[in-house]
Image (cartoon, rainbow, N blue to C red; front, side, top):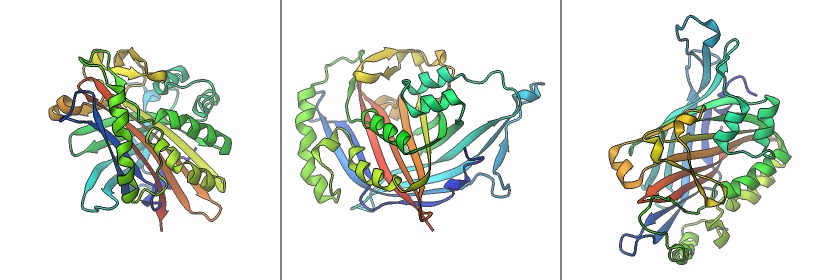
Amino acid sequence: MPENLRFLEGVWEQVSGMGVNLIAVPDRQGAFGIFDVKIAPLEERLEFSPLLPGEPDGKVGNNIDSGQEDRNQQLVGVTYSQQINHAKDKKNTLHVETGHLLAEQALGDNSAAITNSDWQQHFDLDSGDPLFLALDQGSVTNVHRQASIPHGNALAARGCMHNVNANDLATILERAKTRYRMNPIQHTGGEDELKREGYTSRYFEVLDKVNEDGLIGFKEEHLKEPIGFVMAKLQQMVAKSKRMIHWHVVARNELDPSSKVEPQPGGSLSFLRQDQKKVKSGILNMPFVHHMADVPIVEAEFIWFSDSRGEEFLFYAQKVFLDFSGVFWPHISINFLQKRV
């Protein structure tokens, strides 16, 4: 694992035509449970900067005077600034975010360390997942993503970073196709049933408009599994890679934990109080957002790699669940970026 995250430093811009944003919103003119799917091609600029420019390693101490030196901690990392515009309507800003990506370096014997089973529960991993195996082998670095979004959200997401090979990556991408799907989940506390046929019929009316907007190659099946849109290109690129790093972070809303639900594989729901989890994370939504489209869960995965020519690339997929009156819709963002010299 890298001793710090400064390999990310620099300006990243997307590979042309490889960024897409999908979100479903209620059709307020129709019956409840009918959703319109909105799709936008992206133009993104992502910049990572040193956490502390004057410090070669960018280390930040987090020393709590608890009388126990072995509980001290060091964080290394980078700050970031992200701006995403509509690729065709460049004045249309879709997303602005600032934050930090930090790697944790515990000093001494930390007996309060989170166990592998805690992490596996945090990510909902099974035994065939490369991250599960990396945790078993002790070859991961704990990472923290702290973010602020101006329209009313702040989050602290926690996760793990590890080196991967081509076989690992194939497994990660295949599982990500299912993890980052555009499928709604009915909150069991909702007052109305989701009219699945209703949203499905609307799903495909947007395809002609999508092709006009420049998402060449975006097909019907990509509406359900959007990672498929970049899969072939990504696999072609990583085949020439000399080194790859994968990290996966998750944040859950810790406010009013008894009312939050966690989507499980297959679309079922289980209720689990956040304070029962040892991997603490959180999302803070301002009151307007909380009442209109609360954000209970954010999940994201990143893959960094360099090719045989030394050029560096960054792929990510992110899922943000939005609670629209008891229906949880994922807001999916996918992009494929290259570091600019």
